[in-house]
Length: 327
Image (cartoon, rainbow, N blue to C red):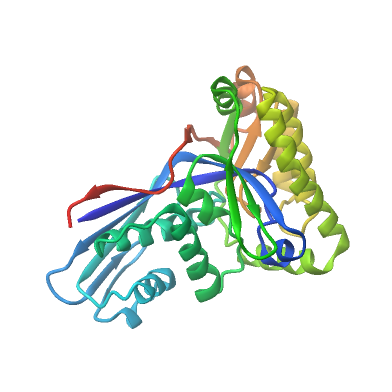
């Protein structure tokens, strides 16, 4: 039996610039951190030569080609697994449509577990590249690259997407007390909504390729990644709140469907209760709100938004890893 554990991520600024329609023209960048919420993938040799795949549903099939789960099918085909395998997955947080990169965390963890099953070591760069290939090239998801690299590398990073398709991952260098203060001042609230972000991302991709106003907004969001890094290096956590507020204003301009009247009202209520800035995590339209506010204002914000559920978290410094290995 082999068990992999891959962290989920929250992004702060730059989201959307990791789509190829944008970064292949201009180059993109995001700042994100992994958190201590995980996707677990378990692989075990099966007595017979068939497959059992268990996620939100359970599949029992004889061949890889019969597997309905597109990512599992593509991963097994790419790594040449012929049969006799049981794969299960569980997650700490609703694993679809919540804006925490769960699909990519699953893909990274699945690939790492399969490589380990074959007796192979896969480093973070390999896992991220293979995950991007499977999700984007093979499965055709209209997504970017940030989630795969975040899950594979882990930590608080500035991730750059170069025009030639290469990716650079640079840790945010700052004092430990600054990192802890940022963590303490962040509040994550679950909206209760999940959504399929593909339609939003596909529209955003079209507009980032064709619309000059969308491109200008993304240019500013990319520039904010440097502002974020400099604020952390200077120990000015409160500047992060201002950066996030401006980033949310810009993100809402990217395409329709990122926000709506209810979400705008929640955001305004949080600001009146003490939040300095915030954003919806992921592509928008649901999932989790992330707010920056002095820790002593968190209760006021929670009470101002009784329909939303607070979720405690900590930053996670490590990426995907094998936590149990008994081949």
